[in-house]
Length: 565
Image (cartoon, rainbow, N blue to C red; front, top):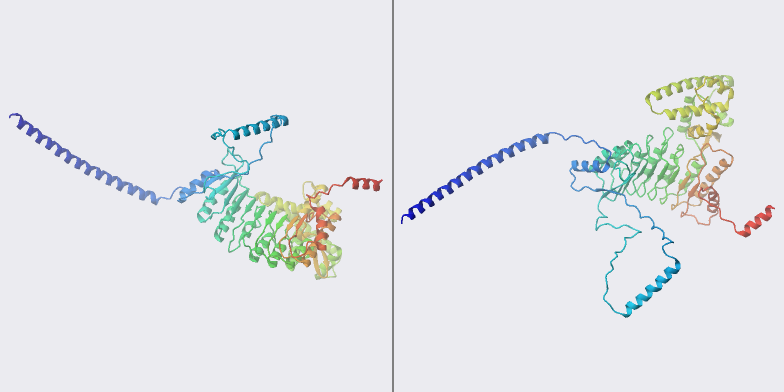
């Protein structure tokens, strides 16, 4: 009986202790909630402070993969195309080792294999899985499911172990919008060894194309640009090949370029006052260029002596454009603007037109008074040459200080001095009295190389029927105008141009180049057995640097020896 009250008291005490613990727990929760709210408020305040601050600008290191990934993360891109090495075709398998097995041993092994197969057929047994796995394929590479179609940035590294040695960038079939252009603006100029950019079907617009052209001008070693499959409404591809461009090869296949874009490209190649001096190869295959656009491109070749390879195949070019190309390849008459620019260049040089024929000199001087004697004209030309030489020296000193344009102006001054020296030896001796000045230090062996870079307006001219004619473009060595609409008239004009170039080459005139070495005109609107086409093929066959004459048969060799003896 005495034990029950004690047990009741102990129960009450337990209840009280439990209630105290519950109250203490609630107080703790309240305190914890207050701490959390305080910390959330402080974190909210700090986030507001951090949001107001602009992030520090990222400076690219030259490692394209790291720079590209960091800039994509900063731009907030959810899915970032991976940077992967460009796949290559596997090399050929190594040849079998002849020492491993002799022919007799191979035959014996084949016989033994056949006998064992026959024995296995006679005795039905359960198939035994082969322990050796099938070797991987050697003619192609495999990838994971759907991985081939995911957007990627393929790169080519000069050294696989050096991430900063990226030389080529390839993007295939996914849209490069403004966000990616902003990223490439920072990544590409930082890659010092980048020389090739290939964007195929990336959905460029007028804005992104203009920004890409600005990025290309900042890449010091960029030489090859391929933008195939990118139709742009404004057709502003000429922005990539301006007068100061350093791009050597450009491909614009299947870009739906019309006569509007062809006109802009032709003017970018050359005008009477400006010309591109770096582009050597231009590919305009599979576009929408007609005769009008092709004539603009042909006009771009009038004063351009840098372009070596031009392809405008698979367009809508007809006889009118073919005649224009034949004229530009042979010789053409200068326009009024070109004649004015020619006289301006000659006056700046301070020398008479010593490279012209006497007929052209007399005909072009009809606007001058006929009462002036040759002596007074000679004095004036000498005075002009003296002023021009002093002016050239001042320009050379300024260029040395600035560090720009030194080589170009020096070559022009040297070419002028060499031309004057050829015209008058005594006059050249007077101007080159001091050593180290003018062209006194240049040997005669260097003269042909200097004449090759002469301004086309200073070529030897001839007056014919009131027009001033100069030799055409002989710097172009490969022209592809196949798969167009050229007929018999255009074919004959091209043949005349080739014959004119061959005539100049046989006469030893190589100052303007060697002329066309390869001309592709097949699959046009004339028959393959046309007389002019066969004659053209015969002429171009020997000019092709890859041409190999057919080997003679023993009978032909014996007959040639007999006739020679």
